[in-house]
Amino acid sequence: MFTIIILQIVGVALLYVGAEGLVRGGSSVSLRWGLSPLFIGLTIVAFGTSTPELVVSIEAAADMHGAISIGNVVGSNIFNIAVILGLSALICPLKIHRQLVAIDMPILIGVSILFFLFFLDFQVSRLEGLILFAGIIVYTTFSLIYAKKQYKKGIELFDEDDIPKPTRSITMDFIFIAGGLGALILGSHFFVEGSIKMARLLGISEAIIGLTIVSIGTSLPELATSVVAAFRKEADIAVGNIVGSNIFNILSIIGIASLIHPIDGTGIGTIDMLVMIMTALILLPLMRTGFSIKRLEGVLLLFVYAGYLFYLWPK
Image (tube, rainbow, N blue to C red):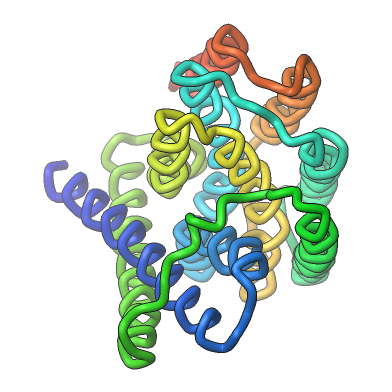
């Protein structure tokens, strides 16, 4: 048991370091090529923080552990809203950009429902994956066009200080990128292997492991980022990152993973998918009340996750 825990801790550490290296190297190269900080913030930085979920889901799907792959995304989306935003709201009430309420949240709810419909047969085919992946291309293109229009009006959608500065040389950039990718691949292997061994040792399903331990582990970078942002009273940035990450999780991670290998997610139940949709549905009216998420509403979100864990607990 001790070895398995160490394997997962090392895996999470490598995932975190790998994501940081990939974002730093990719951002530096992009700045050298003359790409705007706006473009980098909405693509490399935003997507880079979700690479742990991406590589873990691909690794699990390729190794025929579809329940872990699907459970990772479903569990991460639930954890991101119910726990990360809940804890952040307890630290500091969260300001909400009107764009999130008018555009991004309806998109998140829509893609969550689409994912649910695709998964009614407990599988995600390559065709369904292609549709989801096409969705992330459309969403990213739209976000860039919209952000540029807002930028010209003087409206900031994210803090450009969050963009890593260029490194000392192009060689260092590619060292960060190569090292980051290597750490992500190795970390995902350790983490998935440790999770499978833990499921077998504890006698519980891979689905529950994916919905809990794996999803929480891959969401730790977002948790750390959002909590720090809340303490710095910049929590409005954290909310946008979480919503964008959840959209990316469904469209890109499930899309890419199922394109590489069709996913059989037997073990992930309808209730799990409905809880994922419900958390997004609950979040929308909370955002609309004064365009903020208050401390009491943060407590409500945490209770939602506690109730979900009670449902998952082996009877």
